[in-house]
Length: 223
Image (cartoon, rainbow, N blue to C red; front, side):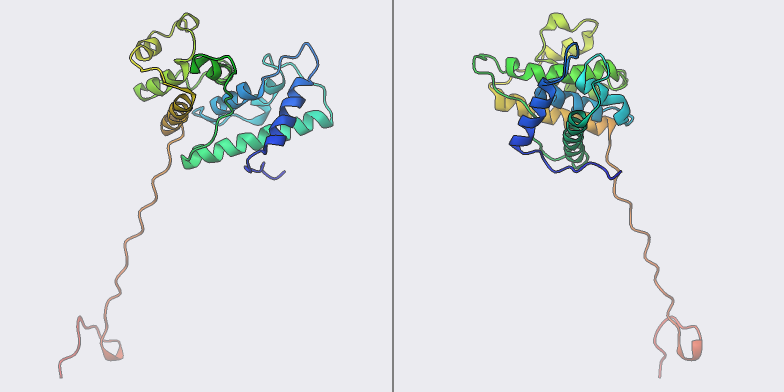
């Protein structure tokens, strides 16, 4: 099977994805599109690759219960894997991408609009805890930039994270919050998905100069 395309989803395709998630029957608890986006980023930033067979089931149900098989589920998975490939490409190249974060009409604080995305990211951290378990001081600040949108009371047993969050200046508005979020994701990628430095070119071999008839000579013959 060919790898999924990393072509960005169009607005109508995102709406279709949202409709497919909403149509999943109870008692399944699917992620909404914003939480799905955070979840995919959390999956992609793990120190070791997570297989689709491991992460896809939680899209349709946060408890991993199987969704009814059929064309609708196949379509859902195809759209999700395209978004997964798009984010993976952006992370690999360390380029900007637009997180699926939507400003709530009645939101007075950017954190309110950020929360669904961050909740999806936290879902990935709960399911795949390797990133959070890393013993690296370089991972704490970018994680704090993400989790600062949670209520501190919801961050149990995260003293190091809370300590850093208290030093951070809250974003002035949603665009600034989104910019900080993408920067945080790329900083995490520098730890868990470091880019390989380009290989040094091999030393150039300088051929030995030779005189006429194959006799060795370091320079032109004198006349």
